Length: 149
Image (cartoon, rainbow, N blue to C red; front, side, top):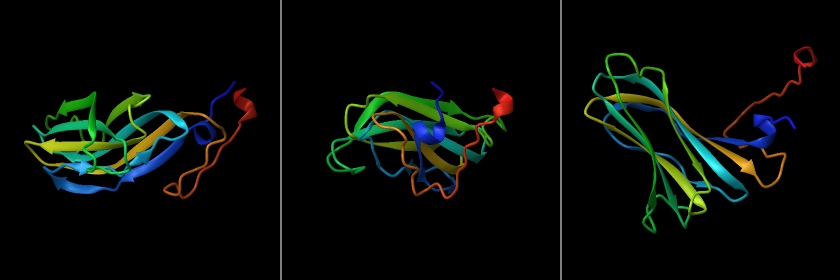
């Protein structure tokens, strides 16, 4: 069986770009119904040396980032930047079978400024296929290249 990202997973843009700052970027809430796993990818822009970046996934029993109080998962990715090693890079956290139906990501930026190009959520291990393409994706294409077979 061949897997195809467009048919077997759902990619959602859950946070827009954020200017360089030392503030938290909180993604939109993602409904996990029909999926067992989700990977959040925080895309970075220009990151100042000594900036500490932490991407954490949180879950909630309701579609909210605040009420009831969300649960922080044990998974987070943290990186301390030097002069250029985080520019244009990404942080990623992958969660299998989160404890609650709703999930979201929190990207904290401390010590020094960091720009964010956005955050994506990739939902996979779907109960049913093909998976519908999310409205945040405005165009997509799949090619089955016979020359590559």
